[in-house]
Length: 94
Image (cartoon, one colour):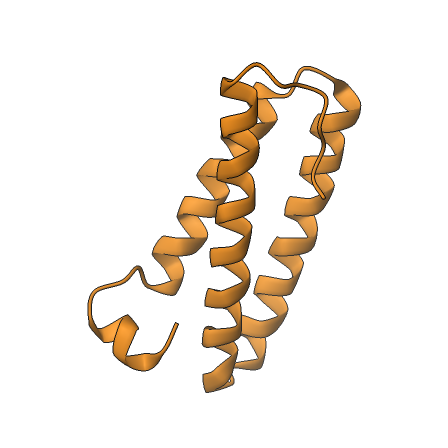
């Protein structure tokens, strides 16, 4: 996301983080196996640690790196939820 896109009203970093967190909750609840749920929780833990590390550094370009990371992750989780809704189960995060 560029600065111009951000100013054009696309979701800010906090909003995007919240969307990804809610999506992860959805995918964990939709997961049928304990192994799949554990993999998604582990992946979310890595996302949270990365987010906090970059935020703690306070570098300006860090926000844009996080926006890219969270946007890609949101797409990944939404695609996984769509698979569950289509009846495909047992596919963990990639």
